[in-house]
Image 1 (tube, rainbow, N blue to C red):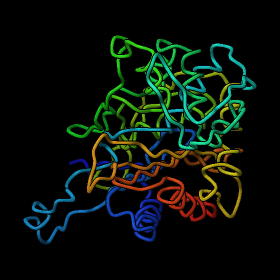
Image 2: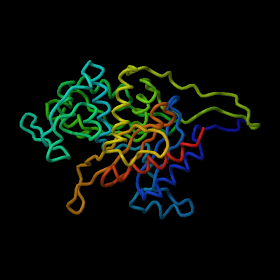
Image 3: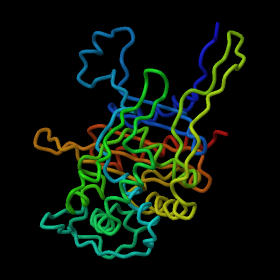
Image 4: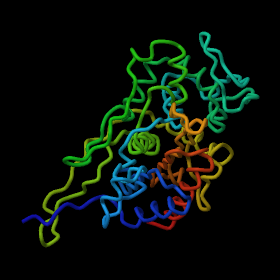
Length: 342
């Protein structure tokens, strides 16, 4: 009889992720690590975990330890700005395009605020990515248009569930349709990852793997091969072929933007001790409030090392506060631990 299935998950990397979450007090969240070239899932960590010795207690836990947060969907926020920039560059809009951020922007009578209420001033695309300027990306989104943005997001895997094995798949999340983006304010909301947009940490990892791999979308996978009772491989997993969705040139430009985000911008706390990283912060509003405060989820999505990417790392924290301090340090700790591998 067959011996079983060999998974792509690397036990050491899985432990690195779980330890980094614990060290940074991530009690509800997830970390996904992909091979930046192949799309193999190297780690799929979710917290909290259920108590195998007392399932009844875990069932009563309000923190829902049976929910795999790596495969569940959440509000996305500014990690989506990578899609906006990619769509813009693919249509021929230059990364040198300059817009002014005055602290807010009026779109058909609806005022959208930037997190920098006094405004960022004049920014090009790279500078806007580094400081995560909402006003810039709202204006850029109006220039690109909903159709191209949604087409790019879909090509990068958003809105589609990821089947891992029989009986196990990620949520499809929610990628709005063109009919949903029926006004300029709706497009503005989408342009900084808010509104009806929802995605899983695994989907966000696959999205960033497109850029890390030089433009190819690969469906992440966790099944490597099948072995018999003697450990001999008798069947290998065949992943769906990678599909080019972005050009090499666009990926190189996006990487430079994400590198600056880590070296000089909102992602400074993600900077590893060895080598360079590329990545993006996000603090996503959930539309809910608790004790009069808006509830937010925080993200950091990126890859390491940025010059020759080996790992795509996505960190998600449920009910966070600010991504620069919530999730960026978790990314840094994981990257530092991975720096000596391979």
